[in-house]
Length: 482
Image (cartoon, rainbow, N blue to C red):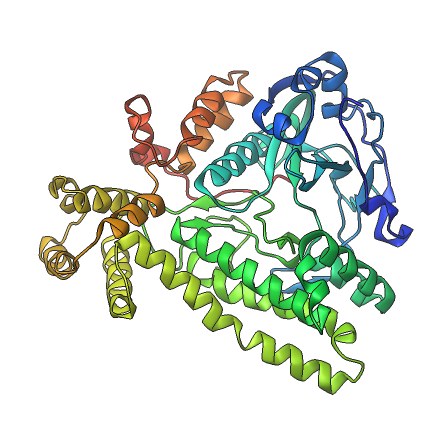
């Protein structure tokens, strides 16, 4: 087999999915194969780039060993529960075990209508394919747990979206799995306790095998999910990343970032910053992401209650006790990451974290550039580029005197460099790659991928990618691809 499938999700009962082949496209064109990821997964990259491989990546053929299916799930979307969502424009081709022994899903996005498409066309515009490829690979290079990009294909077809009649695309996503909080909610809404148990056992075996040794395995599963989400969301926030659509159907229980639709990296800092065009009430603003993570995990806890204890009252008490631990867990990860960004150690630095964020918000300072230049100053560089970011010089000088008074060891300097990237996928750069791709030019896309593969390195050839957008280049909103 050119793709060494080893499928397990397809062995679950039929209510977990609908078997569905991808819907072929008219005239597919291969844009890119992630050769290094293919090698890691044990897949022949040369074959993926062949006409046979292109047919599979476009959805025009089913590879040997593949068992295509659309997964069933529900979810709270902006706080409103929808009992049936599911893969409306995605097909899980199957699973592979990587050279390191880890299991991964291979999924096509934009592969046509399924039983869960509702009123959608099941397709993707090319723009979201380009966005997800760039941002997911950048996130991986930044060290954030994330789904990955294996391939991008142009379909040769047109789709109709908010921006009009645009070119279509298919994206091949790699994930540790596609099980979501909403997958558990799907069976909870139907009162299918045994399906919840079957799903929980599957998730434990695949993602949380340590829970098998616990006295209360389902409570251990819940606490394991708490830990991964606390680490993940604080990692996002430390990079100025705003997911944009933290619905329960977009929270993977594996602890990976999933769904790069209306996401963005914040530039001028503000805790209430929002980019998603559909987040009209700032539910998923930068500063709300921790609260939303807890809210989503509370929905997971509700679904697991019948497994945690036979008596509802006892199950509720245990779940509530576990949930009560999350704020301190989250705060611990948050402080650890922000201390590293500022080159600080110990609890004495917590006030300075708050003072720093207040200063950045008041003066609308670019989040990434601030920490990038602060790191340069900590290494003995010129402070003028840092000071130039602030319109109120007196406020900056007052803050800077306090920050400079803190002694830093070599280890703190190393931690600063590791926490503060030189490059992030700035919104206007991603938009430039998207617009060029719509015009048939993928050179901008390729250049960004090369640059973002080494986000902590100072590379003179990519220095222009650090710069802020011109007024006419500023991206104020991002859009979902459906």
